[in-house]
Image (cartoon, rainbow, N blue to C red):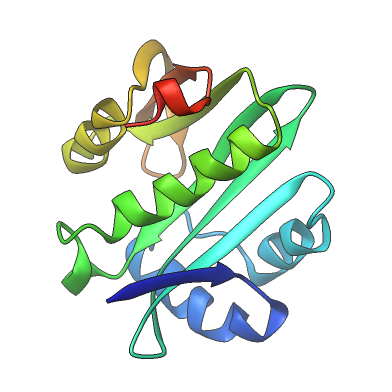
Length: 155
């Protein structure tokens, strides 16, 4: 059973291993992620997903000015397609509702149909494309938005 808890600095070594395994070309640096954690709880909400005490995923939300932005979601390769991403996204959307976000945005790689389907299942719709957003690969980003995060809109 997967549980979710707030991410802490002590999680960074394990999260960074996952980050580099999942996003080898455009992984965040430890300094970037540490900076994100420093903004908790003011404007950020980062969590880890655990199974038997082992980190199997992580996610982060930026929430400011009534808008939310899914900063990242990563799920260990052997756990993808098993609901971990949905658990993490549910947590981020719950936090965006607690922070009274009117809408939540995200970017997803154009070459990641599994993630796109997850976001669509949760009510995100495509609103644009950022050409060559992911570097150095040059993969486009699909920009998505979900209106409202109240209970009546949660998937």
